[in-house]
Amino acid sequence: MSFQNVLFIVLCFILTSCSSVVSDNSSEKVIETLEFSSDLKASLKGYIAQPDSESPSIKKVYDMSGFVPFWVNERMELSNVGVEFSNILFKSMHYGLDTMRYDVIELRDKINGLNEIKSDISAIELDVLLTVQYFKFSNDISRGIVDTSKYHPEFGSRKPSKDLSEYLYESHIEGKIIEKLLDLEPQKDEYKKLQAGLALFLTEHTLVDSSLKVHALKKKSSESDSLKIYKEAKEALVLHDYIESNQVADSIFLKGLQVFQINHGLTPDLKVGKNTAKALSGNPLDFYKRAAVSLEKWKLVNDWEDEYILVNVATYKLKFYKGENLLQEHKVVVGTNANKTPELDSEIEYMVAYPFWTVPKSIRNRELVPKSKNDSTYLSRNNYQLLKGAKVIEMSSIDWKNISADNFDYTVRQRGGRSNALGLIKYFFKNKHAVYFHDTPSKGKFMNDIRAYSHGCVRVDEPMKLAKYLLAREGEIFHIDSVQATIDKRQRKTITLQHNMPVHIRYFTAEGDEEGNIRFYPDIYRKEKELEDIIFPKEEEIEV
Image (cartoon, rainbow, N blue to C red; front, side):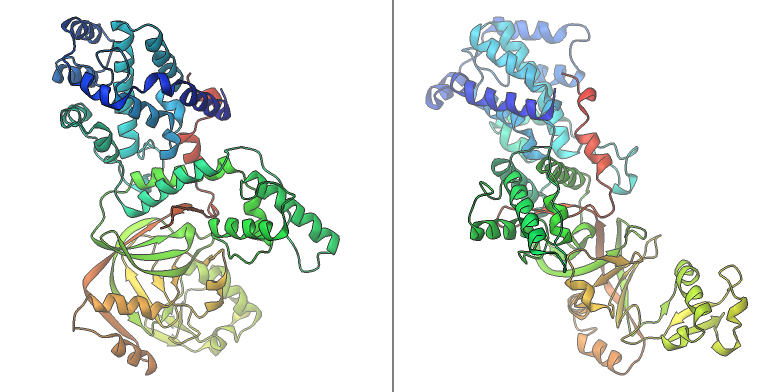
């Protein structure tokens, strides 16, 4: 059964059967306070006691409740909480989860069956089915689906599972089953905004899996080519539900294009450039799956500190958080696809003003040695030094014609200064990848939408603003003016922090904003497909 067919079935069910499932609230509350018959409880106890019929968790929770149903009432109808939970399952896509995980076809049939024949066995089967799905859904929204021991161990271990039998029973006693169910979701602000954005996205966009090829405008595009490309863009905006038809006025088309660009992390320049054309050529279903993967990754995040830095590689942003408050944000440049910036957890321990750059061996051999063989003045012109141990070696003593990457055993170091690859300041945190944050002389890269240019380290826009924030946490020990004075004097200085700043580098290709919208970013490292296939298995892998 296709993804679209499932959506159609679920939608039709909700629209056609809500009136028969949801009773009048006032009468429902009275009925739900009545005692269940001893015959129904005995039948439920016998049903649960069948050999190999249900899991130990199911048996435990019904034993705790005295075999009182959680989701149906004395009239053999879904209770209010049963209706609420059923609708959550039917709309599980709002949480980035595949609806078919929760046996919604069987659930639909059992609800319809109970409406037609109000019998003890129909009520019991439906109640137990919903309890089974409660355990599955609760686990999925709290711990996620991905087995991190098998897939992407860099995310860390999945969170410990709660005793969901006790949790459901306590929620039932408190009369807060739905409220406490949703409390199991990650409570981080980034997750909450993304989940809200995804729910809104699903109300405003049709999840078609078709796409339209949109070509990019070029500087030398002819008038006829430009008209053709804008026609393609209009048709794509219709597909993505940003305009109603390809016959709308130009002003409406341009407004739709602008909103689309904003929602895809692009400069809203109203032009169909390379990156805009690529985004328009995607399809809404793939964008939805991208958001679902990001939600899944947030579920794999263990508790972080009260104050921390988050770098989202895919969005090219560095953010400071204190509690759930975003205090400061910087643009960043990250590693290329060949030199990926890794996901990691660490702490900034110190910063270096006016730093040297000791060139990594891989960059030295791959880039600097070939350039020096072609131009023996390359290193000196670009402010590099050669060292043998701690001794500086004269460039003129090197016979570049007979040098190769295999026999070149010198350390290459670039002096401090504005032309230094690290810029005027760097920030060190321990990690096995030897990456860090630093300034850069290539400021123009921060103006680009796609900012993957580095060898793996993170280049930070407005680096002195970052230093000022870190030093402010140190009290009166250090001041940003003294750091700037050191730089102005062209002196190298290491400033060790008394209060290390936690750093978390992650890769989320979708995020929510304060207005409830969702932003999508290119999967520059092509990392998301494997997780998409786990969360949304192919049709032949789905059991229905």
